[in-house]
Image: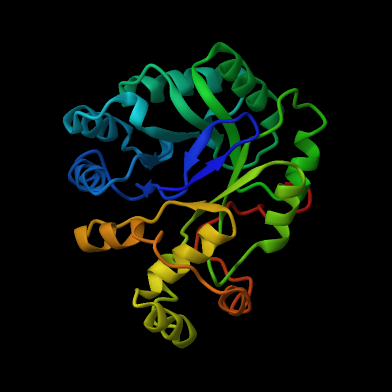
Length: 272
């Protein structure tokens, strides 16, 4: 496994297991398979409604807590200082943990100042090892910089070959903010793309492995999700080949700025 080092020195496994759309029951066998295949970074959120199941899977796995990296997120309905602290405690209890490795603001809103202050409090208390944001654009960071005492350590964004977000990644890199990607495989939309299939054939891997390797070489952590054991294994087996500079540029060129995720109604407003 390779690691992403945050600006506070915390190391994040570059390939994690995504749990969106897995419920408290279905997440348990999926995670046990993932743990058996070497996954140690689990990405969830209060909104996913599966934190209790993840906690159960952690117990059943028998893995030592020090081996795991758990990310969860504060939902928009829980924004505000006191509300965020309470939401964090609920997540902690559901997960059955004594601390969280990474806690994120799930979406930017007009209450980010008080919410970020709560994250700073949690970080200083030692209840969370690192804090960050999700789905933040440059304008959101500029706003955050006006009141943040502790800078965000990571930004989790939608990124895949249909939307490479290289400009935002460059901005984050310039401000010492790491980047991770949700929907890194564009919800399977690009797995039959001829150029990707050609690259995959050359390396003797799958198109999904090519895409995940592309993220890795950009320094972006990913959380592919699958309930298929073969694909779960495939998604973490990306460390024994390397894309050429030309192949990376070719994949970059496939970007057309197309999202596959659902966004808040006002997300693209300059005032949002």
